[in-house]
Image 1 (tube, rainbow over the protein chains, first blue to last red):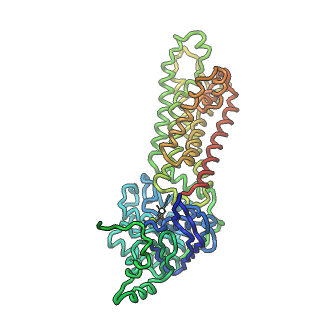
Image 2 (image 1 turned 120 degrees about the horizontal axis):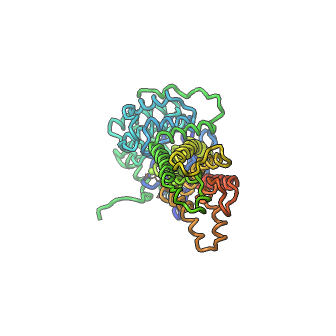
Image 3 (image 1 turned 90 degrees about the vertical axis):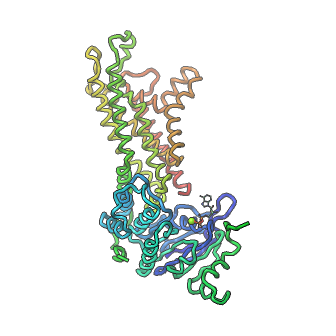
Length: 246
Length: 272
Ligand SMILES: Nc1ncnc2c1ncn2[C@@H]1O[C@H](COP(=O)(O)OP(=O)(O)OP(=O)(O)O)[C@@H](O)[C@H]1O
Ligand SMILES: [Mg+2]
């Protein structure tokens, strides 16, 4: 269970995250949605204790991240695709992280197999494709068999087979009773995986809802109206970076 | 889903939480599995031993003046390789920290071990052990190779002579201390190029800044600049104006401790 209470983070003038509160419950996949620059990654870094909030706090199972006794066994995170030394092999990277939380070699081998990178395990990770890097990141996140997962755009760079794999993985992890927070720009992607939704824009909470509720709302907007319709209505006016023809 | 993860949550481990030993094992595995570590240690060994052989086989003791003969210190002259060697192990110390920032690995590290000073302490312990071992092995090897290269007519040093063992041991410890200074600087500066420039600045440029001052100020300043301090620590014949080797050694240890403390503060104070 993740709880965020009044999180604020300002960079120079702009507030990247502005008084954000929400909860992520066990047994659900919670989609974390918002346009580019909405503050999703910043929020996840604050939950992980990597960035210090200017105000507010985040707790995991009632404790601050820094107070967790075996962090990797309680929280797993995929924050960026390439959070590893490019010269180290995938196996060496996982073995090093495993050591810090008293996790054995057996578990490292299992995670290499689960993410399908065992054949590349002794290659230097700097040479990995984006999709393979993403899989290595997921292996690292699952290393401690944690009850809470934070995944920042995990489908990035994955091929269709990989996307299907990660959707099933996330659903499976939630079905085992874990709390899974997964960020995305794409409401359509969340329709496949998420139960609950947290929608933010310019650092503020726009809605804490469910996929079912949001699509029901979409249907009221116009006949045959979709989930996407409802999402665009929600984020209208808070999208900082939008393209145009003229 | 094929499910290595469905085993559910693992049985609670007996230990109350991660400790220094776990983090040190992580840092040892990290240091060991990056090729550049071993390249730098290998080049360090070549520099230390090779330069000792070059320097002492070309000493030309027979052609020295009486004054130069009196000043000739066959122990100290074995460690000319420290000029390059300190830079190599100092750079290794910098890289241990800055490559984590440049690659993004630092976030994985701090997610696994949120107590940041523990991470730095574990890095210091592992790096210190590896560089001290490399430094001592190479210092004794450089000493042996240097004595073997010295012309038969020149006075030779042996480990049994007063002060010689101390000088050799300190020659091995010095580059390990520079490595720790590099590690602390890396934690403070975060960027590889900037941190290496800072270390080079302290080792080579800072002593030059005292050139405009009077001789007595220059002599006094030498006691506080790392590289001249290394000269005093590895000398068997006492140098004029130099503090005692043990005092200088203690001072260098204090520098390393200060660099690490500053690094620990910076790691904690700033976002990762
Ligand atoms: N380290 C930083 N320094 C300065 N500004 C930052 C920093 N990190 C994030 N920001 C700013 O904070 C805002 C939120 O960024 P963040 O990366 O959290 O958004 P996001 O929702 O993850 O976006 P995306 O969907 O594009 O990944 C942006 O305006 C960004 O420019
Ligand atoms: Mg982001």
